[in-house]
Amino acid sequence: MNLEIQRLTPELTEDYLHFFDTTPHATNKEEHKCYCIWWCNDDIEGKDFSSVEKRRNLAADYIKGNNIQGYLAYFDNKVAGWCNANTKSDCFKCYCWRNFMSAVHTEESSPEIKVKSIFCFAIAPEMRRKGIAKLLLEKACKDAKKESFDFVEAYPNKKFVDEAEDFMGPIALFKKTGFSVCYETEQKLVMRKSLK
Image 1: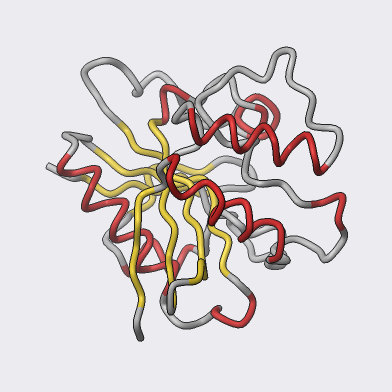
Image 2: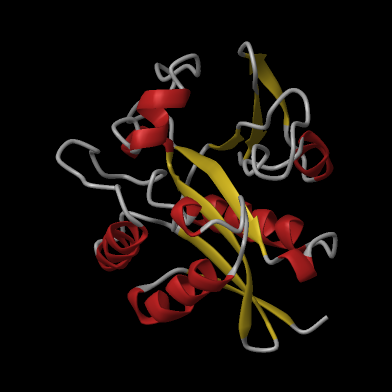
């Protein structure tokens, strides 16, 4: 497969936005286009996420400001997938962390311990089950090691619900790439891969 993984940069903003404009990943309903803005290294206070247009514009600003971080997978020069990967300790004030991740420990994220968090995958429907998420994850881990992170951490659901709810990736994906369970919350496993 002619697949290329690229780190998200401001030069790739239009590719990123077009992918979310045209790719159903939760539902086909327009109001559910997220542009992955809820997982980022910005504080949610004062942000307006109320419409697709506002989320799209905020995504463009976040890419330029390096608030959304991650990787795009290109197949034949078209975006086929996305992985949101950011520094864990930078994301505690984002929308999703504040609203859904309170049971995940934060005390181990300190200046002495650098953790890269894998927050989300979005794969184009026609490209699913082709190993794209695995390649995105491997690239995130490889770069995290180069950048002196101690661990990569992921938060899969304990039980599969459906593709919309399991956007954080399946347990099997993380096991295949060297992650092990650190601890459990009521609904999630916290899985880690050591980079040392």
